[in-house]
Image (cartoon, one colour):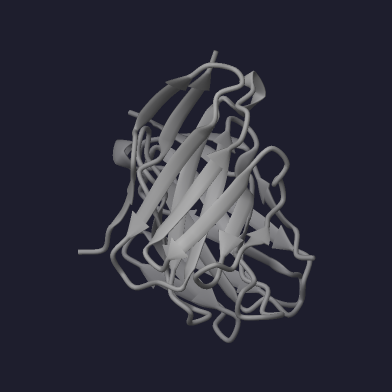
Length: 113
Length: 114
C-alpha cells in the first residue's frame, strides 16, 4: 500500500517561530514536492526535490526552505513563521518515470498566530 | 513555462445529471494529463489520466477527452452521485526534463445536489 505521511495534521505556531514540516514516503520515489493549498488558489508549488540533497524552487519559495538528507524524507522549513503562512501544506512524491502517478500526503493545517 | 487554466471554478449539478470540467494548457509539448479528486478533508487522489497519443479514455462514469490541436482537455462525469462532490484538479506534464513537476489548474468545486 502506497504511503506518504506527514508529521502533523494540525499545527499552531506563533509568529517568528521556526517551523518544521516533515514528509516521509515509503515508495522509494525520486521526486518529492511541497505544495500550499489556499481557497481559490489551487495547489501552489513551493519547492521540489528530484534527488537526495537536490532542491528546486517552485512558484512561491519566498519565506520557505527545504531539506532532503535521505531519499524517503523531505522537510519544509519556515525560518520565521508569519501569519500569511497560515495554510494547508501538502507533500507529494512521484517516481522517476515521466508518466508515473503522483501521490499526496494527508496535509498539515498550519495556523500561525 | 506551462500554464494550465481550469473552468469553471465552481459547478453545481442535480444528482443524475452530467458534469463537465474543462482545462486548457499552453505548452504544445505537454504529453500527460492527469485528473485528481480531493474530497473534503482528504488528500488529492488520481482518478483518471490521458496521454497525448490518445483522444479519449473512459473508466465507468468518468471520461477524459483531449484535443491536442486546441490544447484543451476535459473531464466528463455522467450520472453524477452525491459522492462525486469534491474539488477536481487537472494537470499537465511539460516534458522539457524529467525533473519538471506537474502544472496544476486551480481546481473546480463540484457539488452534486440530491
